[in-house]
Length: 195
Image (cartoon, rainbow, N blue to C red):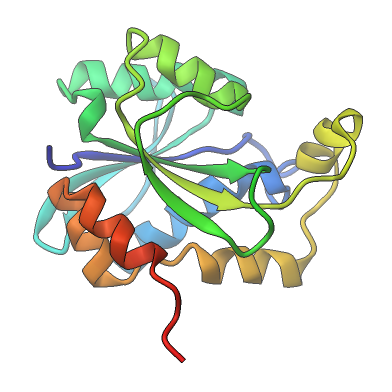
């Protein structure tokens, strides 16, 4: 199914703006800028919402203004209001299972311990069939340090640059994602770089 809603996860406010947990929201804001789509605060949507043309497709973009762990409140509200099915949603978020600089598209699946995804799945009626862009931010090494690593300290600018560059979706990949051809998009996006 064609993608109609793209969301980027992050925590609200300046305190969290530069943290690793916000890399999904950063990615979404860059996508909006790239295609000239304005994001505006929408109280009913519990987020900053925009709508526009991306490579010939009519798409809504959303940055929830809830905390990451409550992202489903915003995504569920927008999906419900606009009658968007889970299979028509792409969510970008931070992935601690991947080292910095590795990003992967994924079609469906569980939450893998990500509380934001867990909340989204619940808000979508336990339907896990949405697409994901998993943006690697690395792991602190010790699970006890996870909260501080993700939300307590700013991501160093050099690391943010690596994550931003790695998560860039070229037009040919983005076009396939938007068309709902996730398998072909994954094949192209995950292919090793030619030497």
